[in-house]
Amino acid sequence: MAAKKTTAAAGDAKKRAGSIYRKLVKLYPAAHTALEHRDAYQLLVATILSAQCTDERVNKTTPALFGKYPDAATLAESEQEDVEKIVHSCGFYRAKAKNIRGAAQVIVEQFDGNVPQTMDQLLKLPGVARKTANCVLGNCFGKNEGVVVDTHVKRLAFRMGFTKHADPVKVERDLMTLIPRKNWTMLSHLLIYHGRQVCMARGPKCDECPLADLCPKNGV
Image (cartoon, rainbow, N blue to C red; front, top):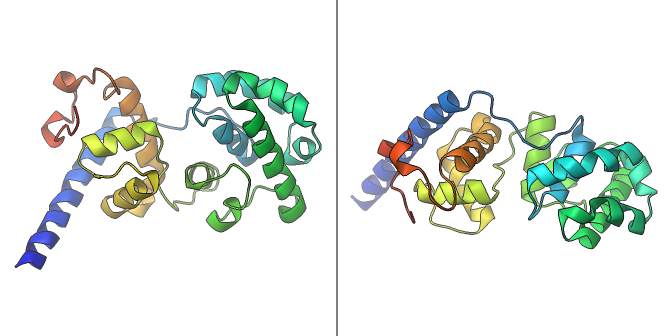
């Protein structure tokens, strides 16, 4: 009996998650990453810089960075102090400069200057965890290996009852069990859009949210 209840509950959760996903698609049909980029190299670097920093600030910083270092080969040969000056406004600039330079060096030394296209290979790069790897794989290579879990996705996943966890890896795992693999990349974009426009960290607009009838509003 307990097993049947668990199975039924899981089925109900998937059904509700599917309904929410479809509504989000209608609300934000053009959802995409806010980080401006032309290729996988630029998105990789921009995503590393976006840690604890707004996408808007990163987008103001990367034109100068990519103007001077247009590819992994040139960034790999850069000087630490010079990169620090360029990315200073993104915060944690010493660590971020070290990571993007280190990632570029590994890309040149181990992957012939091309951003790798597998999760295991991307995780070998300095400054790259699952969030960054998922972002690059999904947006540049069309590979749904997981779900990008940033602060918006983590907050909404909890509020919507998709997870009880705070750890991004566990949140990602829970989302992957509820949403079909083909939708994992878009799910992140949709939740981020909704988190910025309606389900904000402070003062969420629950009264006017189109998902109100499907959301348990956990923690609100």
